[in-house]
Structures are given as structure tokens and as C-alpha cells.
Image (tube, rainbow, N blue to C red; front, side, top):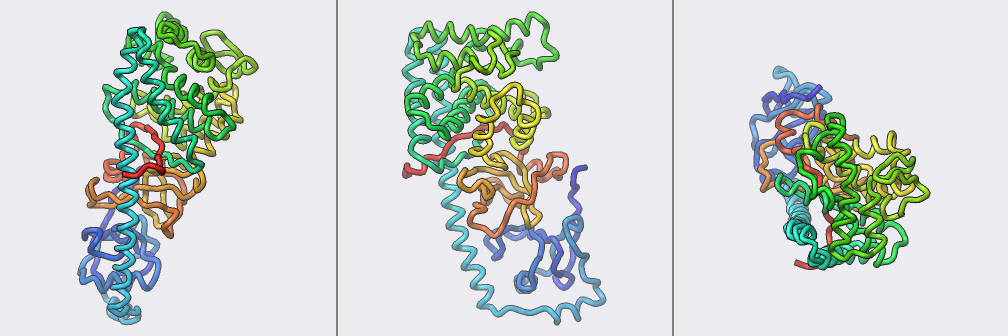
Length: 425
């Protein structure tokens, strides 16, 4: 059942530890990490009472204790310790230092988002060139994939970021790019040569090329609503992709295997050839994992989209006859227990969306916490590796309040891009 907004107003004298407060002041006008938090220490309580705020909003659903009764508040207030002004100044100084770290994080995110946007903008044009069959598209594929491979090959701690990808006209573009990035993420965790990584990225980028020969209205349907003709037509798209790649002069066997086999299964029940696991190409098996994950997270109907965490859980439980589970374990290790896009509850009882994960620190990703009253432009992204916060558990969309849904956008498209930490500016 969804948590509703159930905030009430109390006086400063009614505050006590265990109460979940919701500050309305601008984030920089108080020394706390977030606007919404549970009061856990007497020091926090005392600082709140020194801020000159006479009334506070609090959420009883997330509080451990009720407010102090009005009739006893004066006795309780005097019992609380009152910090010196120097203590508050110290907390504000720490807040300024934290602000600098947060600005650095936002700069890193903006740099990665710019690179993602620039790369995505190139994909429709190169796909048009591939459909024309003149070979020019392959040159552009090599350029795009070369940059991504250089990033993955040069960094042992590549950070995967959640990207904004909401242009419906670029739906297939985002899918091509996402599958390529995720496939390279798997491949970079293995002992592959740079040439193999390049073939992996290129094949994954072109894996669904054959769909461009089929009208969108046919392949965008759920499997259960397709006619027999539509299903048979869809099963031809790997072969169509091979034909298009061949018309462009593609001869690399690794690339062709990815295009032809990305819908084959370990149990031999896939299409178009029904190959079993013994005859499947290693790079094709990586692309299959990335393709399934992206389709689960980015169903064309937003209401049917799974969170990245739930998609991984489903694949682990029910896809063992479809995908190579050894490669899948590498996929999970690199993407993290809480992949970008997952909604989580922090130890301060604030919900947040995971925005980026470093495989070297999978339990301490960067998160966007829900902060009531803060605009997207002022949104705070926290690096949990630098904060005294942890993730308690994942949160289902149904358990979010309406304001949390609007802020965190849990059903938004899931697209990833890697941060090039060696590039300045």
C-alpha cells in the first residue's frame, strides 16, 4: 500500500528524538544533510531548536515517537542540552564542505550526460546509413564504439550512471545504445582483447538492425497479443540484420554472430536457428543478457516496466534456461546489487533513487534522495561512500507517496552510460 503524505505541524518545543521532521527552509539555510530526516541525537535536536524556526512539519508514519505533549514541553526543553553558537558554526562549515563535494558530483554527472547525449544523437543517422547499405554507417559505428571501448578498457573502476532518455522518438536509439553499453560492461569484466571488446560493442549496437525492416506496429506488441504472422515476422529480424550488415560489407564473424544469435537460448528454444548453449558465441551470450535486461526495464508500457533490481531478480530466478548464468553473475557484479534506477530506503528513512554505481563500492552508490520542496535544479545527489548513510532495502513504486513518485520518477526510462574519469572538463 502506498505511503501517503501525512505530515502535521508541531511547535519547536514539541520536538524530541525519534521524530521525522520535514524542513521547509532552503537546503543551505540549515546545517543538516537533508531537509527530511529523523532526529536521532540530542545534538541534532538542540541545533534544530537554535535555528529560530517556531513550527516544524513532521511525519508520524516515519516517526518512532510522538511529539511531546504541549503541557509538558517546557520541562522537556530545559532538560535538552543547548549547543554553543560555535557548534552550529562548525556544522554550517561542514555543510559548506559537503556542498563542494556535491557540486563536484553534479559536474561529473553533467559531463557524463553531455557525452551520452552527443553519442545518442549520432545513432539515428548511422542507422539510416546502414539501411542504405553503402558501408558509411560501419565507419561511424567503429568511431562510436571505439570511444566506449577506450573508456571501459582504460578504467578498472568505471562508474555507470543513470541517464535521462525520455525522447520517445529515440526509443530504438536508446535501446541500441543501452545494449551496447551493458554488453561492454560485461565484456570488460572478462579477459577480452580490445579487438573483441570492439566487436562486442559494434555487434550489440547493431543487434536489432533487422527490426528496421519491420513496421514498428508489429514488433512493439506484447508477445501474447501478436498474431501468428507477426510472431513469424519478428523471428526473422536477426536474419534481416545479417543481410543488412552484409550489404554494408560487415565481415567480422564476432559481430555477425551477435546480430544473428542475440535471441538464441541456452536450452535451444530460441530463434532464428534454435542453437543450444554449446553452439552459441560468447559475445552473443553477453548481448542476450543485456538485451533481456533492457527490455524488462524499458517495456513500451511504463506500467509494465520493472525496476533494475526487480529485473535482475527475475532473470536470476527464471532465466537460467535462457541465459548463461556465469556471465549473468558478472553482469550483476558490475551493475551492482542496487543498479542505477532502483528506488531504495536509506538508513535515515528517506527514499532515494540510485543514480550511479561503482563496481568497486557496489553497496555505496550515488543516490538522489527525495527532498520535499526542492526543485530538480537544486536536487542533491549524495555519494554514500562519503556520507554516514547506508541503504536499508529497495522500495516498490506502490509504496511511494504521490510526491515521491513525481520527484523520483521511478517509471522513467532506464538508460546507462559510463563515466570517463580520465577526461577533464
